[in-house]
Figure 1 (cartoon, rainbow, N blue to C red):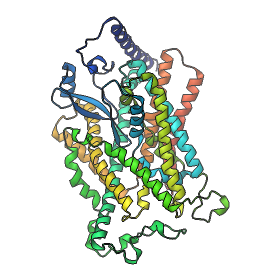
Figure 2: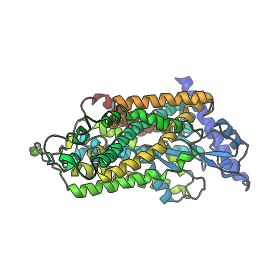
Figure 3: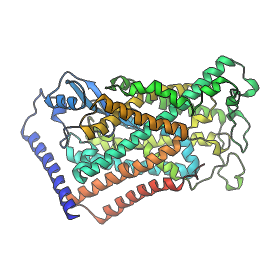
Figure 4: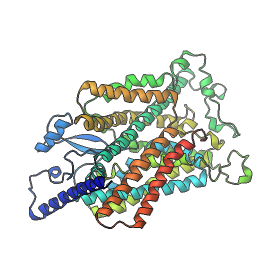
Length: 537
């Protein structure tokens, strides 16, 4: 133990010594005006900026030898710089190196980064936690995640000065290379979970899009026996819907060829696999705005439906027979905290987002504002849909769009928009997995076509298996969020902060107790995901 501690301490001293030398050099020497911004403000620990978020290509005619070397390592031609891009919670937020990013851009980038497919599961998570308890837990989880993200921001700023290092560099600096590998593993699991959830959702969206088109081509404007009415318009009772819209196809060849779990996940292989083998993901980054537009549309969608349905919420325990009855709290609440841990994940993107902040002194304020906005958005979507849902609350699914009939026009627009947005982002996720894993193993994101294709086959195979046999995004997100929330979002930031406090001789029992308690909460949240298996509704 003493040997390991001394190695970590000496390693940290070397990191800080390098930082001090860089600071002194910048004070005594005027920077060369012809020198590029990136070469003057390169992270001090690693020549390779390995973001846990991802990488995106930005063509630039100006490059130095180190940029050419980085391009060579990443399998691309010279004169191509690599910039970090936040692909967290499914949507992308590109960080442009201009150095004049205003607070409004920073706040919006953080909000956009944290808005993802977890949004579709928010009503389901509130059902698992209870109405009041769910809202309270969403706020508490936002507070915990905001604090640990703040710790990431501070420790990276301390190590890197104006050129903020990535959090993985700080982990390596304070906790060693093995722990850095753990951080990368957590990131890979998060990205793989995202690919699996995307495949399930794309299969779901494509299925309902096909039903919508088929119903209008075959049936036209006629709706036999009310089959194509949204079941939400049916009288509320204690039972959930029956999928009458599917029954009409039971004797049709279409029903056999167009199955949500048996055939469509396989069709997606033909559509997606060629794209994920592209050497560069530049083309797909041009469609990042789909993410923001999708979130805005979903907010409008929920508000419009709530206006049509009205409020159906009753927390009176004596009315538990009512379809509108909503328990204040449920024992399956860890499903919410697991999903929320992934929904609020920003620790692996915050450095990329604030790197070009014009006024870095506003970073903490902007971070707090962003988390408040994200918390409001998630709570709004979850609570409003849950409270207005006119059938029995147990009918709410982990993808709330499944509670809307296939032929609903607004739902059709939402599904087709989300499908094309995910079609563009999924290749980015696979590229990031490739960039992190293959570069870690072979020092190149393109060691050979054979390596890339084999990795992509594994990713696609896992995604298809889950889409066929376990197409439940709520459970997948809660497990992935529980693990990564504990390890990457809470444990690593707290551990790095405690070690840095020890090195600076500011460590106290209060810090140890408080941050130890946060780590315990994260671990308990992860373990609880196994406890509630079979108990979620």
